Structure formats: C-alpha cells, structure tokens
Image 1 (cartoon, rainbow, N blue to C red):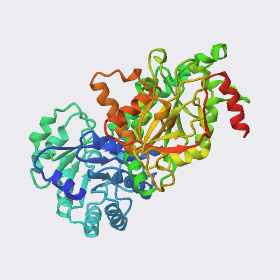
Image 2: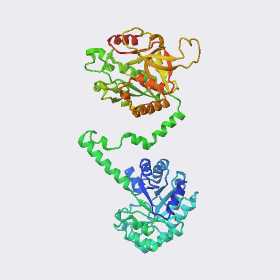
Image 3: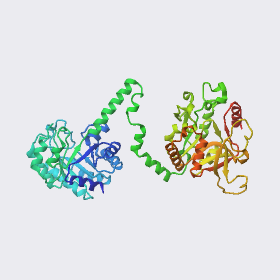
Image 4: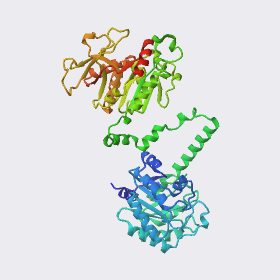
Length: 540
C-alpha cells in the first residue's frame, strides 16, 4: 500500500488511530519499529533538533531535507507539521509537489500568519489568517497534488488565539468545504473542554485530529467516545531524548569516566542496526569487487609459551621481540599489507602486555583451562562474515595470505609440502590431503581437499604440515558458527579443543576444506631457537 493510501485509510478507519512525533531519520525509524502506523513530522521537534526556534527560523527546504531522510528510512506514512504552508498559496503548491516527490503522505497547515510562532508561546496575541486566504491555500494544495490520496489536514488555532468555539466551528467548516481531508482542532488548556465542545457540535462531517499535549491526563476512551479519528503524540520522543542526553553528559563530566554509564545506554552496534548496516553488508557482497578489505582476521594469542622459560615471565610469547618488534606485530603487519585491516587479537596470559596498535582485543580469561577453540569462542561475535583465523605466533610471507584470501571455497587451509620439520624437536600438525600431491604431480588446475590434521600421523602418510591458517568465506563463517552450535548443543566441551580438532569436525560433517599448498615461506615460533629462525626469516 502506498504511504498516502495508508494514511488516508487511518483517517477514514472509523477507529481511533495514533501517530508519534519524530524529528530525523533515526527517530523516525525508532517510532516505526515501536509499532506506530504513522509518524508526526513535528515542526517544533525538527526545529529543536536543528537548534533553532519554532518560528520558521528553519527554512522550508531545510525541513524538507529532514523529511526526505525520515521518509527514506521508514515504510509508514508521515504527516508533516507544515506550519502555515511556508507562505502564500503559491508556496503551498510547491510544498505539496515537493512532499509528494519525497514520499511524505500528508501535510498539516495551521491558520496563522507567516512566520508562525509556536502555539504555546503567547497564543492569545497571535493573529489568525484570513479565512478566505487560508481556504485558497487549501484549494491550491489540493489542486497541486498528483496523488489523489495525498491528504491536507487543516488546523484551526481558534482556541489557542482565544476566539472560542463559534470561531473554531466556522473556520473548520470553511476549511472542510475548501477541500481539507481532516480538521485538526488544537487547544492548550489542561482539560479537554475545548475538544469535547467542538466534537459535540462537529459530528462526523470529516475526520478530526487532536494533539492532547496539555490535556494528557484525559482517558483515551473519551477521545474514542467523541469520535476523534487520530491522536498525535506531538513531541515526546524529542523531550525524552533531551532528558537522556542531559543526564549522560552530566554524568560523564562529573565522573570523568564511562565506567558507570556504558552499560546503561544502548551499544554502538544498536546505532549500526538502526542505520541498516546489515543491509549494507549484503550490498557490499553484491556490488563491490572482492577485496581483502572486507575480510576480518582473528589471531589466537592467549598462551604463555612455557618453552621460553623466564622470557615469558612478564609477557606472553606472542609479544616477545626480535629486532625490536613483537612476533604478533609482524603477523599484524603482514595482514595489513595484504589488505586485511579489521584484526582481533584474543589474549589470555598477561593481556595488559599487548601493545600492537589499532587492533581489537578480546580476552580469554579462562586461557589456562581451555584450548584454542576456547579462545576462538571469546571472539565468536567476529564470525559474522569472511574471516581469517590464525595464531599470534605464526608469521608468513605476504604472498601466502594473498593467495589464501583469493580462495572462494567456504574453508581453505594452508599446507607446507616441504616436510622441512621432519624429525625435528617439536610436535607437528601433519595434514593429510586428497588427492595425494606426489601422485598428482604435473596435473594442472587440480583441487586439493583436506582429509584431516593430526599430530600422531605417520609422516609417510602425511601430505605436509598445516601452517596454522584457516580462511573462511561468508558461507564458511556461517557453517563454522553452526558447527559450534551443534557441538555445544550435543554437550561437547569444544572449549577444550585445539583448532585442528575443530577443522577436523568440519571435515567430518561433510563440508569440504580446500588446501592451498606452499613450500616453506612461514614460521611457527614455539621456542627460543625459533626466535633465531625468525631473525633469519626476515633477514632474507
């Protein structure tokens, strides 16, 4: 249903309808999400949000710009508080045309003199417009509309200006005959006396809209009994936001800290949600060329590194320095040079020792009692799109990452076929791959898939060594999250697992894990001797 048609249907529904004030795209979205079927584009609130008075200090084109954002961000109809129509009949014609172009469903104009003053500021001294002139403005607006369902609501300020019931009825009748789709009867006294008197005389000649800001204690059932068509809650979203902002600003100033306020206000990601960032991410996938800038990285760096002895008494092994640069900083630098900028490091042992720069940190407080997957679970909210998962103590050549991130398979691991660590001092994550690389030598465009990663594999049965890198596309990240959910749902304590165990579980579930082969070009820093190898690695 068109927004204009939806608003007209509300006016003519025969039931009491409600719309709520909004003053920008964000507040309009909040009003819509709260369940209201329509929005009041309040002149007072829009002006206040701009920091100006409700005296036509904001030009009609500035108001129109705000309305465009409100309409673009919502699906429910908007009734604009159009003041006096921003001028004479000609201004009214242009206003209606521009509102229709921007998807605004209706406009309310009041019978005062331009520039207007807010009704609650010395209303009795404010002159009313000439009845015939105002009727001409209504006719001009109706003639200008191209959509038959666009509505013009004529607001009489007779009670506000102290003219009383007789003048209100006379003006309302003239405005109805001029073509107004509804009459807004306004009053500023604390009881509904004016509205009751008007409704009893008016009957059902056309829909009536009211704004019970001042007579707010009146039971809503009275408005229903009177036959009112629509109630406007006129400025309460703005007023409540002012109170919240004042309290927050005062608290931060007094305490010089966010410690006691952060958990009392919506998180930044709620702003992103209201802005529609999830939709934007889908558009990125559809329209942007695939680049590493869309990828994230999670580096697991929670362990102390017992093999380093006293070197890790004061810092985790990932922060040990070679040539003045921490191991993990080298891994981060390679990621950034490859185009991956959104990097999360999962810490554990001595998290305060990490000083890598502009990366995100997540701490696995249970690092002593959990495995690598326990650290991954600490960063679980990062599994919401393409992501590279690796270790903070593994470094690789740039080309390794560049080739890996080009893979479009849901999952891809890197395997070193050089077998350079055979018989050496440490446990090796041997990888078994199909088809066997030696048997397929010379064949082109061959796809390799992982069968398993296992430190206990017989070296002769291994195809190479897993290099500690797992690349997940959007689909892969989704499957990985679902795999974790299923395992935890089955009572499996996956937090104790190593990353290879999780990768094996993915393979066993029937999802293919692709393999990118390399020959050396990487280093896993596990002990003191590896620190020397790291020096040589970067000296080449």
